[in-house]
Amino acid sequence: MLRRKAMDKLIEWKNSPNKMTLIVRGARQVGKTYVIKEFAREYYDNYIYINFEENPQFKEIFEDNLSGEEIISQISLRFNSIIIEPKKTLIIFDEIQTCPNAITALKFLTIYNKYDVIASGSLLGVLHKDEPSSYPVGYVEYLDMYSLDFEEFCWANGINDAGIQFVKKYYDGRRPVPSATHNQFVDLFKLYIIVGGMPKVVNEYITSKNFQNVFKLQNDIIEDYKADIIKYAAQGEKNKIRECFNSIPIQLAKENKKFQYKLANKNATTRNYGDALAWLVDARVVNRCYNLKSLEKPLIGYINPHCFKIYMADTGLFVSMLGNDAAIDIMNGNLGIYKGAIYENVIADLLNKKGMKLYYFNYRSSLELDFIVIYNHEITALEVKSADNTKSKSLKSAIENWNIPMGIKLSTKNISVNNNIINYPIYMVMFL
Figure 1: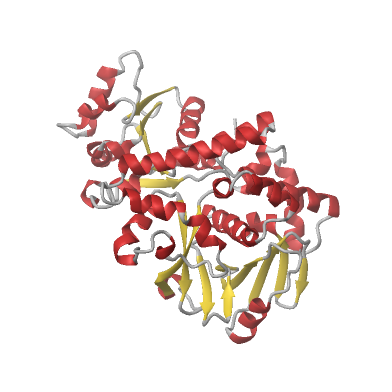
Figure 2: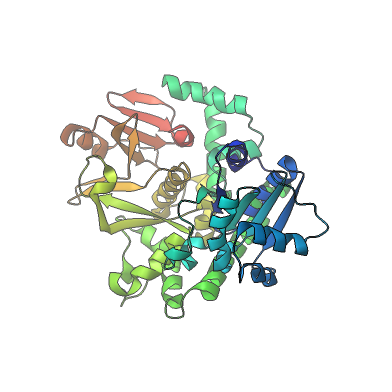
């Protein structure tokens, strides 16, 4: 079993004295169902699992009386071989987005407060964003799940906590990492870029080390995402969503990676394609990185809503969209126009998995900073360098002219400090 940070979050939820029903959100195939079931097996005497997509007949439970007591009674009738005991039985509703009444009922199960309940869904934001009345606001709490981050990928590849902490002490001390260890983590990070974090894909790599199998699974997931568009998107939006999705490699190949609708379709505009792109964001397939009008706190107050970049939510899937040869080029450093895009994408992916909002800064085309983050309570410019040349005029300019106290460069080079600019190895993004 892959070690997942979400398991610790689930344990924390279980032990909370004032917990509410938990909704686990995330894109398809990031491991939600697997982790929840493992959690149920390990920490409860038994569990009830209801998947509304696989077994739509269970929707009948929620057609009439939605009181917590009645819902539990209806469930017990259908699972009479399982003894349902308060606090000892976990009730799991999977793909709950296909049963709006069940979403509404979560409020009453929280009020009833006798049984632990977890709901999960892959397209919750997509299917019900226009039905806020069905959401039990104030009666549920949320856990966002993603594909594996780099630290989880390290665990999967045999790096234990001691190994991670060994590297972190150099991050904390701003001292160069021993060369052998540094090279090991750089190679592992490049591998992470290729494999990505989808659990099924990571398991395949760990088990077989066969990249052809890895690429096939990645392509299958991409096709599953496209199938979701066909299955769940509104009729008039299907082609638009697919065109936006297919345009991502083209968008990121540009020197200016700002998303341009016309690259999805020559007749596309914000007005007629904005909802299509929002569908992909709400489905958690892509991440949106907003441009900032000014470098002031709070950052969210200075976004330009019409100027943004779009990154894939799993870099392994992005690489698979570029073709199988891209993996070889990554390891050999021969990616040309896509190298910068791939390294930016993986940092956007990992910052998002840490719960950090994504922002960048562009000033009159003369200054562009890849990411703007809050680091040690200060606005900090973050630059991603894919090439051996790690000089950054933009960071120096930001510090000198925009009152930015510090800049961080992420590259394959070891740790170095030059005045207010720190170069961290790219794998140390996990410590930011």
